[in-house]
Length: 236
Image (cartoon, rainbow, N blue to C red; front, side, top):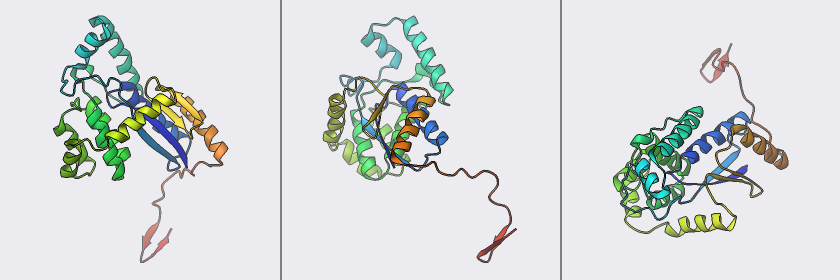
């Protein structure tokens, strides 16, 4: 099993794009089922207010000192890149958010065996559904969507549970020199910074697989439902 650790934030547009590039690379290399992807917490802007509900565009213009044209040009480029991996972004509807609670909820979901599901659902909530990830009702809807108890999730959000685990991820990122996300670490030996093209992920995955002696899974082509099966046996 190839271990991949991914530091990311749920309001990072390239984190969702990078996730798709990695998923496509895993499929193309025939390593599906042989890769363990673990998402780790990272906050792009921990100073964001817990009650911030500004449009993303307005927030960027204030924090980065960008003008309207600069922001729109950046949005256009990122939207085009997202489309290349099958994602649809509408920055005009996106809402800024502090992601501390979302990361804590993700740690809870991981403990319940729903880590991959919650990571996808939180990214989709922000980028596809344009929902505010700092609102408890949104986070509880996401928790319920992936099969978690709404009541248990509420108990997590109403406390500071998993805050230490989130802080540990962030401290670990600082220790290994992560300066931006997404940041992918394969087997603690190879690192890929940013949402790189699928080809780079494939090359790195293949290198790691070769070193570990992991062979691609067989890809069965054609219709496997030929013939008739009944009474415990199959015939052509």
